[in-house]
Every structure is written in structure tokens, then in C-alpha cells.
Length: 188
Image (cartoon, rainbow, N blue to C red; front, side, top):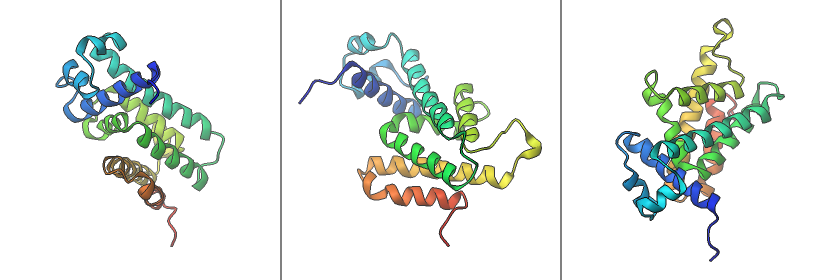
């Protein structure tokens, strides 16, 4: 078995730590817990990241980079079914690839308005990717906001459950269709 690369090791540390941050909160997650989760000594962990805060920042950066990349990829598409499908597929794949970071991102809904401002900003970028500008209240559709929030919250929780039960392949199409249904693109 090939030895993991530094970037693979770092990704494992980031995702494992993000899962702990999501479960216990930043303040209640210790460096030792993170080291234990990735089978490293505390010193070995600190060789990769100088602090718990730097690991948290890396998790937030991974999430931000993802949503910004998706927003850029879909911004030329008209708001509608194809743009929504592209967002759903990207969110589903990200959750499969980064389940810990994805679990952390769900803290947005749980902690707002007192949540991490960076996570709130990332949520706003996701809404932009779906054609919603929360800064322009006169053009807001409450139905669309509720549909998007419901679709992506449900997608995230379902995809995390698929990861936990090792049913990613079996559930993928069902999760994507449920999200599209919630967005109003169901097959009737």
C-alpha cells in the first residue's frame, strides 16, 4: 500500500478535526482528541498544523474554496433546473469527499446568528450559487429560500448518513432526486 502524501495526511487531519468540531464545538475539542482520531501523537499532529485554530481555519478554507468554485462554475447558467442540479451534484460529492467538513458546515443552521461569521458568509455564497441574493430583500422569494434551505440541509444530513452507513453509491441518486424535489423540480 503506497504511503499517503502530505496533502492526503493533511486532508485526513482537517476532515477528522472538522467532524470533532461539529460534534463537540471548537472550544470542547482538544488537540489530543484530534491526534487520537487520526492515530498521531500530539507532536506528530503539530508537525502538520501549528495549532487547533490552524486546523479549524484549514477546514473553513476547504469549505469556502468549494462553494466559491461552485459559484464560479455555475454563475453563467440561468437560474433553474440545470443550475440547481449542478449545485446539488457538487454538494453531494463534497459531502462524500469531506464528511467532517460538511458536518461542520451544518453548524450554520444550528448556531445562527451567533455562529462563526465565516460559516455564515459561506452560506451566503451557497445561496448566491443558487441565484439568491439575500442582500437584495425586494427580490427575495421566501418560497425559494425555504426550498433551498430544506433541499441542502436534507441533502447534507442524508449524504452524511450514507457515508456513515457505507451506502454512498446506493443512496446517491435518491439523495440527489430528493434535493431536486425539494427545490421544486420533482418528477410528477
